[in-house]
Length: 192
Image (tube, rainbow, N blue to C red; front, top):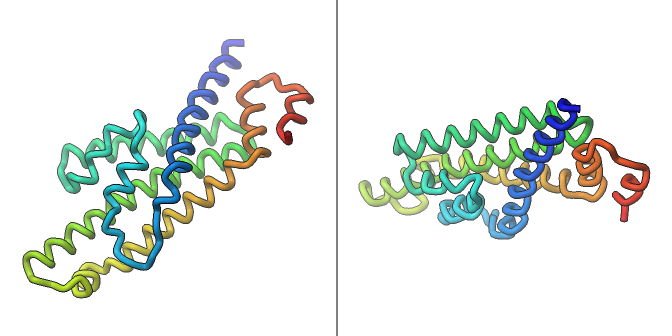
């Protein structure tokens, strides 16, 4: 019985964290624009996607790129998310484990990609101020387009994993696994 309780606790804890991240993404995904232009407001996007008690301690990292204190905090938190993803893959069964783990991985990958893209923007700003580059020269000088495409890929991957996770069938399966003692009635309620 203790093992079942422990499994219930771990599943519930992971799921509460994932629901918070899903809610944050749901609220802010509309603000992520892929307009083919440099994403100059990436730091604001990062702030929105870290606006939760789980991630609030890394929010300042985007404004302090390459500062050891904030960089360490960012890496530790992203490592924590990677560990949570791996744990989800072990405690959930079947398709829910890949859906949950994939979403957590995609979320942390997007945060890291945003951080890296902010570093590129900072290099562009330095080039413009120091060498009087035009915006076009700065874009070419730091290969901004390549980094922007990586950012778009990370955004698209997170959107895809969110869609995979956020459907009534998958949510029902996850809920039944958390409960541990699902009934046939619970299964039927999944589709209502």
